[in-house]
Amino acid sequence: MATQSTLWTGLVLLGVLGALQIPTHAQVSLQPNFQEEKFLGRWFTAGLASNASWFLEKKAMLSMCKSVVVRAADGGLNLTSTFLRKDQCETRTLLLRPADPPGCYSYVSPHWGSNHEVSVVETDYDVYALLYTEGVKGLAQDFRMATLYSRTQAPSAQVKEKFSTFAKAQGFTEDSIVFLPKADKCMGEHA
Ligand SMILES: *[C@@H]1O[C@H](CO)[C@@H](O)[C@H](O)[C@H]1NC(C)=O
Ligand SMILES: *[C@@H]1O[C@H](CO)[C@@H](O)[C@H](O)[C@H]1NC(C)=O
Image (cartoon, rainbow, N blue to C red; front, side, top):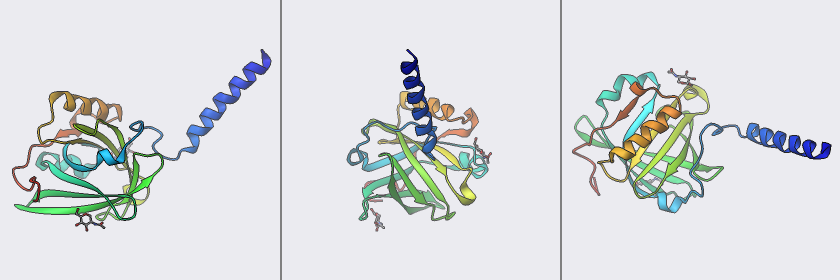
């Protein structure tokens, strides 16, 4: 009996130490068996949640943005976003470097120059994806954001509910969650 309980304690300790050794992503789960290939293609940013002050100030003015995800030459992902700004379509590219485990990526924000990590927490690849982003160093260290990706510009009530539940589970309050209105420009196949 004594050996058994020692073994048990040992396993529990290993588990705890194992968890402690993971520097980030400890608090969000990841899509099991993430299949990067199926995640590629076009997504619309249909919902966002963050406690960043700039986000809380601007959230009412934001509209949906289109993101096209392709494989980058170095093995990471090239995420090109298109959005309407001052009546013009603008694009921004983020290069996501694969991190461990699969479904987790890191990138340097071209705007802030800070390091971020983004995780695909849950996705069915065909309809929606729930993403969690956090700043890991420098200025953006406190930055946290939850994102709802939708394959269409009209996510279902069910998908929106899923996102609200997810965002609240990450500690975001109701008033920091926004569903972005459909944009009438820049969202087409070639725009
Ligand atoms: C956002 O939340 C995180 C963690 O809850 C906190 O560390 C950070 O200071 C908050 N940021 C702002 C701008 O309130
Ligand atoms: C990322 O993709 C866009 C369009 O899909 C392309 O124009 C751009 O050159 C790519 N950037 C890199 C660094 O691969």
